[in-house]
Length: 340
Image (tube, rainbow, N blue to C red):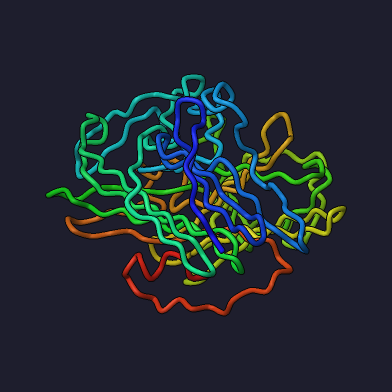
């Protein structure tokens, strides 16, 4: 059975979707871009907290706009070089929120208030739909869109997020999407094993901007210990229709975490891997586009008036009984949102 509770997280509201049978749950902070603050999944009657989140208000406010932990990255993930770009021959300047490199980073939805549009509880899953209307009030991004995010916790399939961005403007708009979760287990990150999907590594310059070159990346093509390797790496997964998975193995706890993302035309064809300096977690970030996509167009989605982007990613602990694939390729978000 499932239930949805709301409580105070200091000055914010915290929404908790709970499986009362297994104890699995997610917590969401609607006032800050629908941030996922906690994700707890079950294996063999034991619950594992697998996201590095905030335990108090002070820590939460420190992370916003700095580590971006758990944040949605809209209308672009990663960096825009010097914060400026051209679209349809017009130059735009975004706010600089990474001053040390003089870039605009991770969009501007991460601290916006989402409205809870709908809550649905079923026997085997719970769904929470949130909505935000961006009215084009920033001079650096004068485009209007509607954002819907559907969070799903499924008793067999774990966590899934489906994002839908609809152009409600009268002109074309450039968009991208990403998620910035930091994963952890009860073991040290250096002791974990990692397995990455087949990919190409994006070459970057000293200012973290792509050079235009890519190279085949074979490291971690099979499960390998992370050790002391440093990651701040962008990978291109290709645009073949389907799903790509990144696996984290905690062998001490017999735990295998599957972070999956839909790939294909206009979907999550890029992946960012990052280990912060404290090495307490590892960020596995699905992205629809490359770094600086508003300038290099790598993976950039251009929506015409009335058009929508929609795609999903999710997290599951392997070893549970998994449901078969029910995805009927419908364009209806209410049908797409919770089927793996």
